[in-house]
Length: 201
Image 1 (cartoon, rainbow, N blue to C red):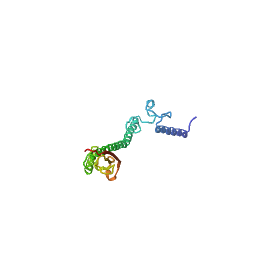
Image 2: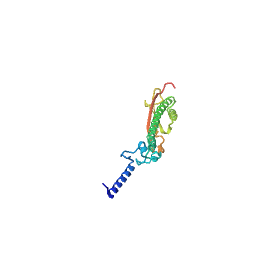
Image 3: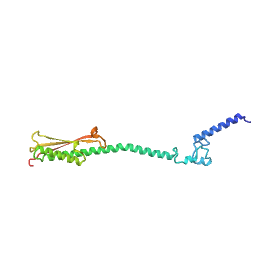
């Protein structure tokens, strides 16, 4: 049965729209996603995709662009997560070193104090021993304080008197500018040591 010109025009328009739709969706002739394998071998243009564009490594829609983006994201997230972890480890190390410093300083200060002939020289010797010990651990003497007390409440240099030395240390946060002005500290540490004044000195 002969078709009218209107039918032929409608059929031509329909096929043209369908072809453009397949090209836009990158579909092959049977409505399936076009591939770069067998379908290209039969009809390179049936999928509506440019083979040269698919082989272009700079094409952001290809696997190369996805791999490059994944590497950048992994590097950025890795650095973002590693910086706080490393800073936390350094801060814990500073606190641990400070704890060793106050224990050693208190012990040395108490031992030095009981060997001196009088209380004033004993206090001076204890403070000097504290500064030397803290400097060995990398802590400035300005962040520490020394307290000396006699357990008996009388003469600290009397034979048999127990002398307790307490050293307190402020550990600042590492790598913080203006940390002293802002008073950003990692912790406050203290340690005490007791020595008995001997009868023979």
